[in-house]
Image (cartoon, rainbow, N blue to C red; front, top):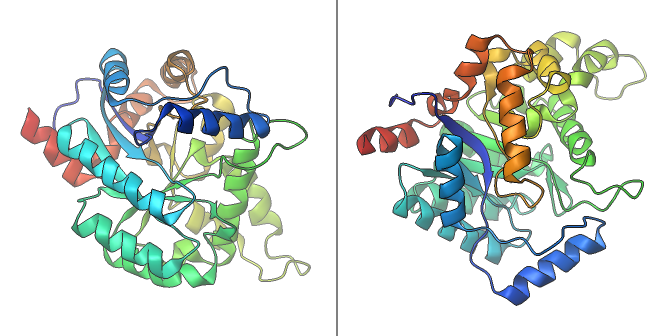
Length: 319
């Protein structure tokens, strides 16, 4: 592993391919229609991102972006790969997969691995109505399992408001828990043990609800039950990141569920709802909130390099 000197490897960072002002305005208007009241259109740029990374001590970001349509998804992966080629020691690519179309997802995974040199893959909890536990995705998981791939699982931020509250505020946490628990019931994590699944936002609500699932998941009134031992075995195999959740309320359930050694750093940089202020408040809390020992908090910053050896080699080559 290259020396990090206290710098961070960020597994949860978003990017946006180049767009016109009209395209950004239309995207902004779509968010306004969903009750997400940003003051202006979102505009991501590699220059601003690298400046933030330098200021915050972020050595590398693993970039992800998951458009809702196949043509745009493939173009986004191409652009993400070009960013890595330009900045190989600063960026990595988690290539998006269109999991509503399993054959297309398998093809894109192969293209991303062989042609784009992707470091891993990014999926949405449910993509155009298809959840990750759907049986149709088993051939995709089999392929990724053969590769011992890393798969980053992000909630669907395109959900409509809940009780007039924008989905990114808290609904994404429950969306994450629903998908993780569905995959537990379907034994996805048990059947594909060679895949490293990283769940966004400290796992959303799933760590805090895992005890309830273990208690009730195999009761007679639960169809397709799952035992407490199986719940623990599957959930403890997961990794979670710290994006927007580096506080005792999220970290302590995560430590109890997956262990401090399976928490990796995430900032949510590049998402429209993340600012320098919120990202830095979250990072400072990771160090200071007391949910982790100083040694545990320090280890989180560089742990992702164990998951992404090719990214680690690119960093080492640049030293």
